[in-house]
Amino acid sequence: PATPSALLGRLADIGPDGVGARVLTRDVDEQLYIGDEVTLEFALPWCSEAFRLPASLCTKTPCTEPGHQLVGFEFVQRESAALERLRAALNDETVRLTETDGES
Image (cartoon, rainbow, N blue to C red):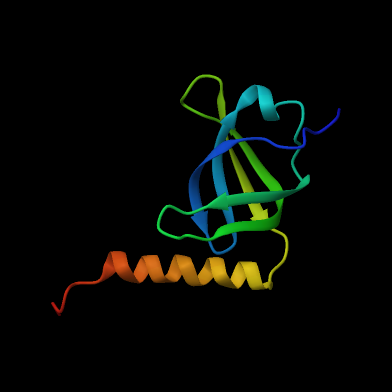
């Protein structure tokens, strides 16, 4: 089957090695398979940069929301400028969220 040039999804989880997203089942059911390589493009709500990273589809799981699936992608490149910027943005946000405002 032909893979569409673009699929839209909602970011559900993100880490330094990959992302999880909620997508419409009809968009991925017969069009993306485990192991397929794609290019992910996404933005984070706390960061002005848009990221574009190659990734491999590693999971497809039915979602509690009818007509949707949770899909997991692992970043293919272990080292790249874009991935380093993403890791820095994730680290900065983690630090911000865990700051205790001077409390020990």
